Amino acid sequence: MRQVSLREFRTRGAKALEAVPPGETVLLAGQKGPAYFLIPVLGDVAMEDLELRRAMAKASLRESWVHSEASGLNKLSADEIDREIGQARSVRKRAKSR
Figure 1 (cartoon, rainbow, N blue to C red):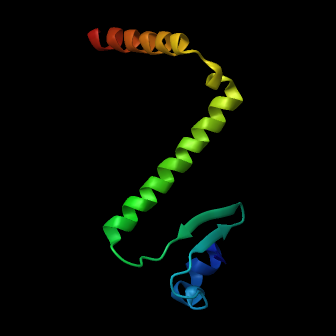
Figure 2 (cartoon, one colour):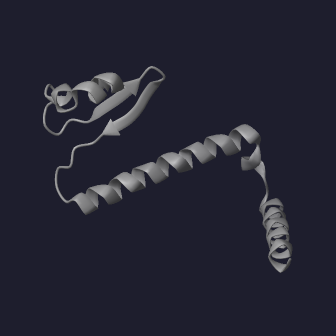
């Protein structure tokens, strides 16, 4: 994986990517660190889009797991989860009826 600065990519565009071999992923990074991936399309665009969306969903799920562990929510019992769901539904139902 190659890294290209956001500034270089903005100012030089395609020229900034000339040194990148075909098929290699590029990481665009700014002053605050990594910002974007440029992922080459190698075949069926729809299938690659689906795979990319799956990868993003998995990353989001992992982030949720880390958040739940940090806040202690991963230790809730099934009964506690059901109570939380019931409370949220009753609040939503009251808001709808107004």
